[in-house]
Length: 159
Ligand code: HEC
Image (cartoon, rainbow, N blue to C red):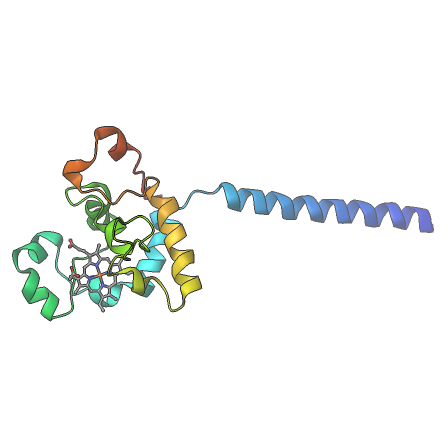
């Protein structure tokens, strides 16, 4: 093969590789954060020790909060149906109030579950950003204070 042809060949391969990489990066950026692709794993790794198997449903938890607290158990955060109750259901905003880093709170204090988001400041910030993206409308308001329009903006998709 002539040096000229080899050069053209190399250029084509390089161009193809570059477009494949940019295509991949763009696709990853566009991909929405969902329960299935991101949130489920964070909860399994960071929260399920106290909110997974063996933890009460929200209804059971609400009946005997002090009893469950003593056992270091909070309401179940899986599967998806149990989790969204605390995002945009009857206890809307609970996830946001507990996980917030304090920047959205009047008193500047982080929610008491923020600390569990990660083993370092960087990991906590990274996981919080993913939760925020997933929730869509990061509001610390309680269900009764959320307007219908605000509630609709809380997306928290499953898939
Ligand atoms: C070491 C145990 C433990 C870990 C780990 C933990 N939690 Fe909790 N969580 C609790 C307990 C106990 C309660 C109930 C007491 C309270 O309200 O603070 C609770 C309460 C909550 C509540 C409020 C529930 C309600 O209806 O009042 C939310 C939301 C929550 N946790 C989210 C999380 C998330 C998300 C994670 C992981 C990032 C997490 N927690 C990690 C023990 C834990």
